[in-house]
Amino acid sequence: MSEYVSGIPADQALQMLKDGNAAFLGLESSTADVSAAARRRTLEEGQDPYAIIVTCSDSRVIPEAVFNAGIGDLFVIRVAGNVIDDHQLGSIEYAASHLGSNLVLVLGHDHCGAVDAAMNHDPEGYIKFITDDIAQAIGDEQDEYQACKKNALHSVAVIESSLEIQHDEELGLKVMAALYHLEDGRVDFFE
Image 1: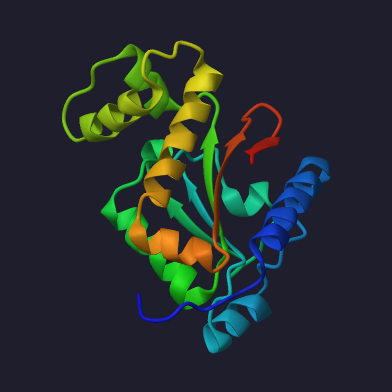
Image 2: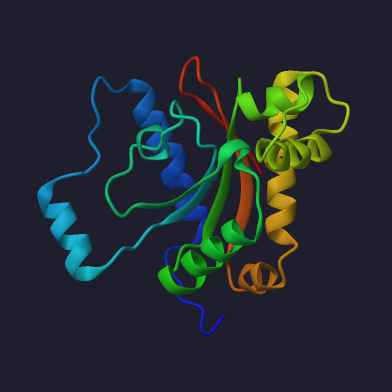
């Protein structure tokens, strides 16, 4: 990476996510700024996401809603099973170094179809690349919640194995995992 751009501190970003999730749990409708003015502002001034969220492609997991965030607040990377490969690492490095995001949150969720497929099925085709990675992450775990948690923590370990991420961690980047509950919208953070 060329240079490291420092945004708000990781601990402050984490508190913003926690506060956003608490607000989300009590909302009848969103208060996040998705207005035309916000779209114009981020077009003219650029994006300034306070956190990088790596999450599953599941249509029920919407990080901007879960954390009551508006346009430009989160840099979201979505892939089935929230697995990590070079493409996700490159996206994380970009957001950390060029946009100043100091928190990477791997957001898994319960009742994950990709984790279920790794635990209980033997898929074929390109899905197998995902389920093989998840199977390696969860080992012989049979508890669905614990398997989803292990999978998210495994993705954190993969992210932290990147030499560039390690350099950024020395400069204040924090990488952690969390698990979203589909039933009630609550997020468990694993620090």
